[in-house]
Structure formats: structure tokens, C-alpha cells
Image (cartoon, rainbow, N blue to C red):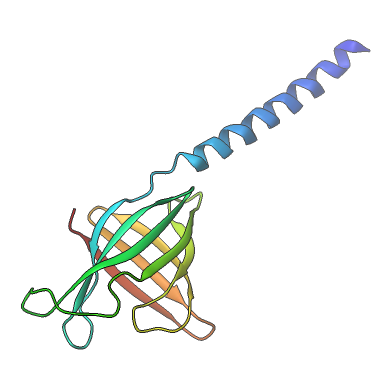
Length: 137
């Protein structure tokens, strides 16, 4: 009787250890910290966004704005948080909310890093917009 229960107990223990390992790996996904430059807007202004870890998630805040000549320019976006609670996903991406510097709403977003580029896909109910940020530091 006891020998018949052994395979069942072994399977249960393996399942528990496997789910614990998967949870730990989710916590170990590296957050892409650094300074990123956005694509130029219609006026040629680019933003520098500093990404950092906030808990287990990725967050980002605008540090500076530059005009098309590369000089600092005044902007109300400086200091604004643009990435909110971007949680790591099993595929290595981050899913959360993005608020563009001129947007008054939060968009569901997915960010993924490929080398020196962060590809951000921000979607509302009707459409999606793809943004590519380049790592500066």
C-alpha cells in the first residue's frame, strides 16, 4: 500500500518544486535599467527616459528633452513618469501601462529589449502604436 503512494508523492513534490522554481525565475528577469532616447516627435523633440526597477516591475521617468539640434529644451514632460508597473512576462517582455508625454490616458503596453533598442507597443481599444527607444547608457 505504501509503495503505491510513493509515485504519487514523488509527482506531487516535483510539481511543487517546479512551480517554485518558475516563480523564482520570474523574479530574476533582469529589468532593463538605463537611459533611453525616444523617437523624435512632430517637432523633432526627443525625450530621455530613465528606466529603473520599482519592486519587481519596470518603471520609467522623463529626465530631459532635446530639440532637433540636440540642445536641451524646456518641456512639461520632464519629470513625468511614462512607464507604470511594467511586470515581467515569461517571454522576457514587460507588460503594464505607458502614458505618452502628450497623452492624457494610460495605454496597455508591452516592452521588450533587443540589443540596444527597446520596442514598446502601446495599445488602446482601437489601435496599437509601436515605439522604438534607443539605449544611451
